[in-house]
Image 1: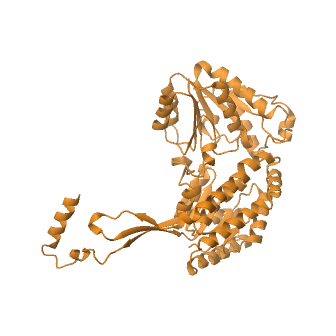
Image 2: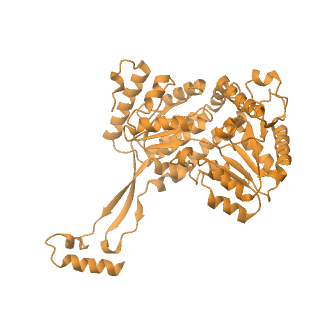
Image 3: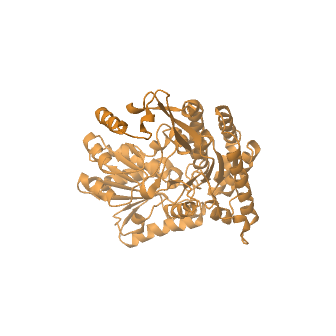
Length: 481
C-alpha cells in the first residue's frame, strides 16, 4: 500500500490512523474469526454506547446543527439504530450458519455449502445529516459479519464525532472498533488505506473520488449517495393525504435527507391546488415561527447560502415561490433555519432541477399525461428513492416496472428505508451495493463456496488416460440435461 506514514506532509493524526489500521489489519489476519458469542457481545456493547448516552448524543448533534429537533434525533436515528441491533441479534446465529446449496446431478452424492466469513477490516466514511444512524447502521452489519471497523465521522459534526470517539473507546479495544478524528488530512487519506471493504455515504461528487482512491487497492466499495428522488402524484391520489405525507417527508431534518422527495410531478390540472395543500400541511406541522423547536436548522452558513441561491435563481427566471411563512423575517437566518419553500414553474435548466436540493425546498411540476412522469424520470440519473401516490394499481405497476430506483415507498415517503428485512442501496449515480439487516451481513461477508466430494462420486473418470470415458460421460451429461 501507499505508505502514508512516510509522507513528509503526513500529520500526527494521519500517522496514528495508519498505525491503528495496520494493527487492526494484522489482528484480522492472525486471529480466528469472532464466533457468534463474541459478535453478540460487540453488538450489545455498541447498543450500550448509544443507550447509555442517548441524551448526550441528542445534545451534541443539536449543537452541531445549530438546532436539531431532539424528537427527530430520537425517531430517525436512535430508534433505527436500536431496531437494527435488535434485528441482527435475533437473526445472527441463522445468518452465520453455512447455507445448503443444490449440487448438480452428475456430482452427487457430493454436497455444496456457502460459508459466510468476515472480510477483515471495514472502513466507514460517515455523513453529517444523520450522523448517529448513518454511522452505526453499516457498522452493525459489519460487526454481525465478524469484521473489525474504523469509522471516519464527518467534519461538519465535531461535537457528535468527539462524543462517539470517546464512548466507543470506553467499550471497545482499538483493534475491534475505532473512531478517527475529523482532521482534513485524515479524511483525504482514509480511502487510500487498503480496507477489505469501504462504505461511503455522501454526495455523488465525493463518492467518485472515494471510489477512485479505493480502486488503487482494489477495495470493494458500498456507496450510499443521493440524487433527485421524485414523487409522483397520480390522478387517482387523495391530494390531502399525499400533500401531508410529502410535506413531512420533505421537512424531516429540514430536508437534509438523502431520500427526501426532491421534486413532485402532479397532473397539471391539480398542480396549484396540490401546492396550496402542501403549503398548508407544512404550516400545520411546523408553524411559522423560526424558533420552533421541532424544525431543524441547516447544517452550515455555506449550505444555507446555497439554498438561498437556488431559490433566488428560480425566482429570477420566472418561477413562482410559495412559502408558508414570511421568508423576510430575519430570525430565519439568525436561527439558520430555512423557511419551507415550494417552487412552481421550475424548468429543467434551473439549478434547482439540476442539483440535489438537500434542504426544505420543493419544486412542483405539472404533467399532462401519466406517461410524462415516467419519461421525465427516465431522462435523468437513477434516483435513490421514488414515491408514488394513488389508488390506481395499474398506473402504480407501470411506474414500478418502467422506472429504476434505489427503493420505493407507495403512498408515503421515506419508510422503505426503515425496513430491516429490505436492503437499502442506490443504483447508478445514486449508489452501489446495499446494507440493512441480512443484506448488511452479506455485504460485509465473503460467502465462500465449499464443495465436499464424496468417495462414491466417479469424478476420477475425468482423469487421463481418457480413452472412451469422456465420450460416455458426455453422453450421460447430455441425457441428464
